[in-house]
Image 1: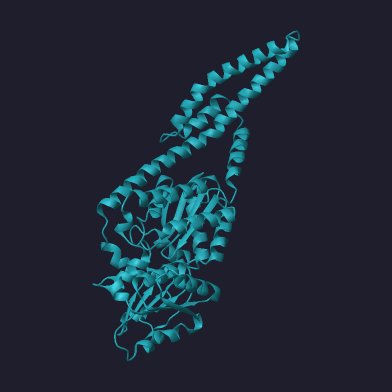
Image 2 (image 1 turned 180 degrees about the horizontal axis):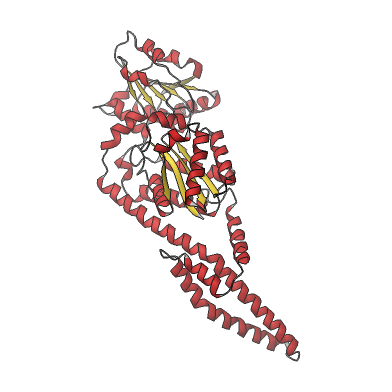
Length: 451
């Protein structure tokens, strides 16, 4: 089996296509389930964020896998395959590992180095574990990706190479002044109460806004966010909630709007914003972090309003500082990809080695049983000594070749050593497969690897 990635992102597709292809939680679950029923795939995981949709699978046939997974991706995205295909990219084996590790480090993000992708990768792994679509390969891959991403952020200054989308978006609105100078004393409307909206609200509170209004479809989450913003020892901002249906009514008194919801349609229309800015002094600043977009893109052409959205963030971040820190992260990724490949190749031969040692142990037991029949006069001490001697001889004979074959198998091109070992010792393929299944079952625990 081999790792395959089929996906699209801000690097391969325009925002309009990404918006239409956005996967709901239900669609993700359906995609994972159907990917496993497809003949080429044995494991599946979906990484879906505001600017990427990627399907990771373990397949036994490359071309059939690409065709089947592309078809399923298009089906669940609701975009025709012919229309989606020009924007799809495919990564296979080591290139697929390199891609995910780069994503985890923030190298493939619109804002280089943003750390929120680590939480999204963790969520993707948790989802596939809960649905039992991740086996040994994808569990190992995603857990290692999380470790690589954390290592990159810990060992380099990649965080400084590109801020989070929230910070970067607010900096775009602030322009030539600091976010604190721009935000001081303003009234902010935050639409949504998820991780991105909550981060935006907290950032605005720390920056010195005087009031925050939170609008969310689930009132309980909105109230919880307000409690966090106004708790003792916090930034001391005034905050309250309104029903999301009244969000447009709050535009008239808002100075800045941040929106990031899971809505499939517009939350704020161009007409609503045009009405809000009519006759006001100064601009209404809007930050749309949702995919698909929450705020009508027509606002870009509206006098009196200034909109920063995912598409404009992508353009603005093209010249963000990278250089030395990015190169250091790339070196980390390259080394980690090599290490992951070596570990996977070594693990591939382990069932064969276990099967060989099991066969040897069975042979020893059989011969000792035969010896007991031929030499009934041996006492227990003598039989135990003979048994121990035979086992030591067999262990010593097998030790060097099994250790060496594991070393060779971990090197590039070493996959054939397992086949050679099975052929040389005439190992039963079903026995090897049984060892593999028993070992793989240990990865089925949905809590495995969570931290």
